[in-house]
Length: 346
Image 1 (cartoon, rainbow, N blue to C red):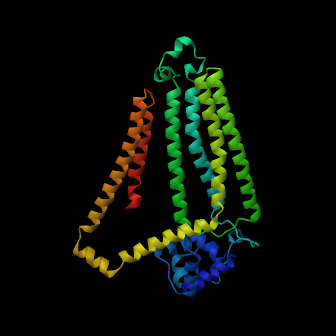
Image 2: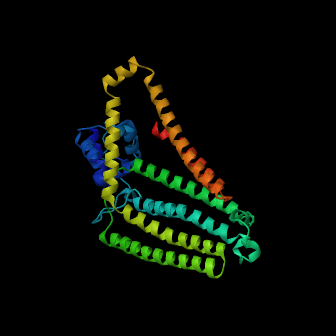
């Protein structure tokens, strides 16, 4: 039997659709159809992955006869009336939404800790009114500023991990079969509406608490602490529900990945042209020049980020705020992350 016959047989005896195999392989359904019809042939890495999925020898898959190979019942896809989530997309959406929402809420909570643990969160008397904001902030609790720094770094790190994880998932599974039901989408919409109502209520409570503590009670830091804490409580469910609703838009996910796949395929086709090899052979310095160009652009972007946050820190310093170092720290971390992502661009 040929490779196309073996592939069609192995997929059929496991009750697996072309869409499900495409999701496991990280290709489009059209690619699976071309492989089974003999109009195209997969690359070596795809052949290795097929042999791992169907638990067969690579040589037998390509040139052997696998019609008599028994299949274990636990490896078959159960017959269902609707599509199934065979690559864990729903779990990925939940985890991604949780990580992004937490990455945004953590810095807000660290600000609440900073203001809530400062001694000036007590009632401000007449003898303290003459002190500047920065002088009072310097008297904060020993773990106030460290909590703010740790919260900012944790939020940036968690956001970077979430984005990197999402990029990896999209690279492995560029096509997802739509398995969500109307009931699940309606549930997500209801969750988003409840989250918006809760966020609006939390924002109103935070503003009222901040106004009362800052004016009537002369409790400035207490008001800022309440505002930041309720702000974090409002942001988390709002961001989580919005990302969940967007994640259920499988058509949008497939369309974005299809455009990127077509761009990568076009670039790969151009680089494999004989004329391209001839140009590179005649100009061997071109790859090195391209790497130098990418390195310079990355350096410019990192420098722009660092300068932008440094200007924000300079404004804070001019206002007499002792937290001017926080924008510098955030800018340095973002610039380092941009520089570390340079190999992905190359």
